[in-house]
Length: 577
Image (cartoon, rainbow, N blue to C red):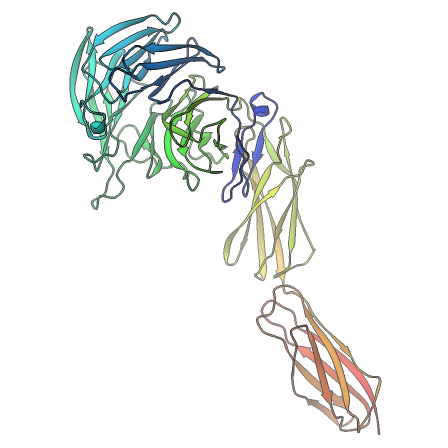
């Protein structure tokens, strides 16, 4: 696992120290870091098909489908909630795909090539539930309302699996039976609360506009309720399904859509939820989704490269702006991406189980992640200040404040987000690091006169709650300018006068070189001489032949512009005959 950097997005990362309960590592754009899981197990499999969790006995089951040849044997690796491998079950000359755990946790149902098996979750004894139609591609298994459902692709060749006609089947009184529902592709099943089950269709050559459907399983008759296809009249927006999940209360459905990202739907009619989740980071393609059983969190898995996060763990409420925990899986200790259908939570939400694979798809890892159990308060104290006292357009301005937080000290500095709002709108100033003593400095260069309001936010993370925003209004004035003259004390009428000078302007650079007005005042009156243009280095020269003797005063003036104050300077020369 390496440490990686990226830009554009606030990110929170989780370290092994946090997961042991010692603190939270929080970072923000422009850098995010690879995150360590609480435990990572290298899986003894070469292909992945299913993940199932027994919450009663705290067991995790991972299946290796191995469907390439009809005599291949499948594998089910069994782990504790702490990541210890207990055993590896081999299904001799019968690949294994779908997995489902009974509600009481006593039985693991496994879909094999030509049968459905029941495996005791403590003794691992295996019995055949029923013989079923031959599966060449791999099948889904789900249990809902006590009824066992599974899919059966109708093909004899793995080359046809992507578009094979697939049946939704069930076991009735120990006998394989067809439900009558079928369509093309590797149909996905997901059981949920309230005796409901989802069936989703992946995008394939025979399904240009795939469907999602909700079924009522309460009486064993499998009654279809809401259904939806997603493409518009021009065929755009079709579902590209990689995973599907019910929320803890069953009221929402989340989809991992490889094209659209994370879709959040209302279960009742599968309409889009009023508030959805923010987009995944740029470069991340949705691959998996799972809600925690306690209703607090949603995990969004992805396929991404480099420093782009492969996993976000965040509040299940899409309206909660708490910064997600972001995980970057990259390398031989982590895998490179979350596999489709590769995440499950423990029922109490204390652990997330995520399966990752390498770029080639031949090695797999099981990550066991513990989100923080508690959240601590954070607050801004003492208001904001700024320096220099007079803000000027085009000059650096520092806005300072203090953020305090309860709970353990973070392993990495916290970050705050800042914006400036002026007459031209709201401008993102990025993030600032909070020092160990809680102080932070936001640097800016305002470019518009008038009031500028600075807003500083701490969005929180899964350990710290967001802080109430703090604001500070600054009046931005024009930048000062100055003219300095060097003139002789005395001069002769016949020799003339040469005056040199410099012009300086703070703030934003002038669009053009300054043109200075020169006025001469003597005993005969006042007159305007030719203007002088300041050189690139700020210098200028005035040459004049005085018209009379005695004291002559030269006044040089610049009128200013939209962002700069005007300036003036005078020099007096005594002219002799």
